[in-house]
Image (cartoon, rainbow, N blue to C red; front, side, top):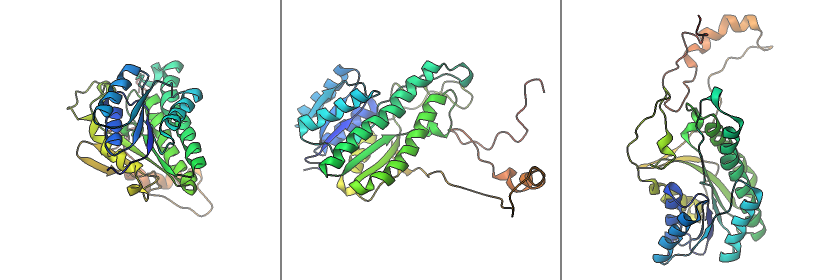
Length: 296
């Protein structure tokens, strides 16, 4: 017996790495899983793994970055397993390039898979859950890259958008018993091989088992977590960490508002030491000496 017995779930990008781990853990807890991957042979391998352990699974290669593909994926889960109770949005891609060199196609290729794919699969799944009257769970995937990361305008922007969608959907879908959370996973995958440090140079990272995010995803998809929604968690390795949501911090207030003269007089003294460091590595604020053109 598992905490997901009798549930139907879909996992996008489930054929390898982190997504494969999600599929294995969901199935281990009793869920019937549709393993989606554009590489159908990889999806079938995961289905075979699950089947050999006595679980239920089916392979799917729908293009989740399209409405047709998202609808087909969710429809397959309902047709084969009777209902859908969980959508795990894991599929992703990268087209890393520094901002001034990034093309429109490179930008949109990442936005279409991450942001649009997450939107469409979640909407198709939530509509079914609402009509079933069953409630359910959506688990999105963000990344610490949305703090800012060199060469990842497209990826960071998409992950930031997914974080904001997570907060919004948690508010909107609670009335239907649908919980919405996200994870910022860690694990060694083909995508992690593209990671660059703050200086834009490649960094060799230690191996981290990508399947170790899956247990927490299974927990979030279960009724044991029916009190958890609108949250983002750092997962994988040895951690489960709450990522703090955006919030207002230190402020200045002036009756009647702020004009330029007042800002020139007060801003530096009150706010200089409060400015936020930027980027994935969260180093100390780097721009106190000014950001100037190369000729100056």
